[in-house]
Image (cartoon, rainbow, N blue to C red; front, side, top):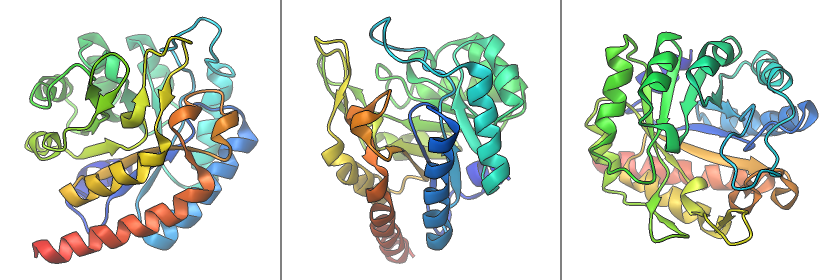
Length: 273
């Protein structure tokens, strides 16, 4: 099912969606978020993959929240999949984590800062799971072809790339939309991360900032350019989220946003025919 979503729906009549909380904070929260998104995506005919990190390894400060425990969080991800019948995706950070996480999820995601790590990419590829590689903030779109090729050379054709902005000075990111069609030339789906692209990293207080007021702007532009999928982190109360709350979309705003995006996607598809 996951391979069909990631590989076969590009191009498709609609975009697919990876969405959920930044990190798994508990079972109740994860199930509530998944239920709301499944209800919306089913109504709008948007193929959906639930996203939740079982652990956050890249934190600015040592006292930042990293997770509730690997096995507990991974089992919650499995319960989301079993309860709602949707695939799930999570990040991995080392080759040893690939096989462990693959027992619980359908898609293994490579964090942007780790997208050049050969051993990590190969380990993820060898699980046979779909591999979603986030483009490093420091890389050109063209350079991502080598990360994709590492996965393919390891015997796995189920690979996608996610655009999540490029460093613009010390404390900002910018999205170069030219990179979306450029990376689609690799022959794999390209996803736009509409939330992390709005991060404002390296703040003096050690907590990443963001511009969630621009999430819809970023997402609309991506759909207009023809991106295959969207990645959106969402939370019932971003101000209370334990990770990346500064750039997450309030869950209550997601249904209307997705509705508007499907209208744009339909108009673009009609225009291109």
